[in-house]
Image 1 (cartoon, rainbow, N blue to C red):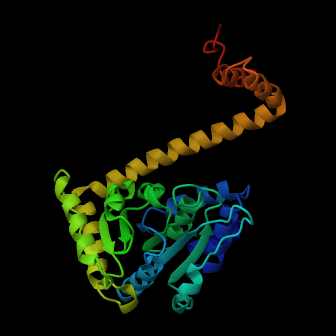
Image 2: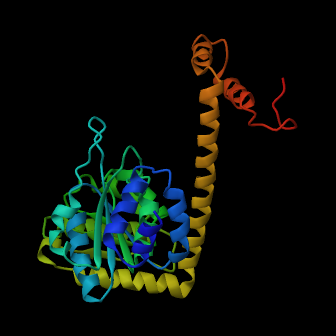
Image 3: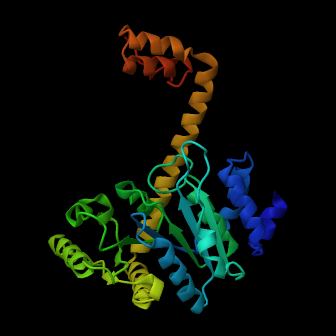
Length: 321
């Protein structure tokens, strides 16, 4: 494991791939290597790409990769694909779509399955970003599963978030109402050569006009990614948003809030796992479930009873009655 970490810090892509696999498999040793690489993270800029299925997110990511490499940036890409609830497998198509970058040593592309995680992001995505950060990537692109309003999870992970829409995306009013519209730093109407592109742009701008004035107004851009149209403006807007965040101090605010959230989630994860490990050993859950079903006990009292049984509460704080 120590050798893998050393190889990672030297820019070894194979080491990065193996460490991300260990993260996905929840390897017992991942905590140690994440602790080792953490001091070498915090430099990569994270861009989230989200939107409905079929909006052309992967095509846009492919084009953005070209722009970033032309600027001399080292890039990591994590494509989060849906996992089948039946087979447990995932489509994992991003590496197929981006084969032209496969031989570029400064590009690392990895597909990950959601494995039941909601919000369009795999549970291991955040830790995989740290691996790519430690690998020396300047930018990490996250392409999320297109699953509608639950996509808002991306805003908890990315520094800049672009929402990709299409003119033929269904009821435009419903689209604008969706929570996903609240998280965009940049709106992209892809496949803008289709009918209705101008109308979609107008509706989004009207929605933005109704919001309170903010320091950054999300631009509404039109692209045709398969013809590389409008993509230069998109890349420029992403760079402008980063400059805005850095100069205004918002970038540090965003990252500070992210660290607080990660710390809270990690504490909750450790506490939950420890409690349930003890519960499985000491508490007969089936009996409690049966009592609740027969209305002999309410679930709230039963929950406190479970926690008291495993000494979760201190003596002074134990529930009485």
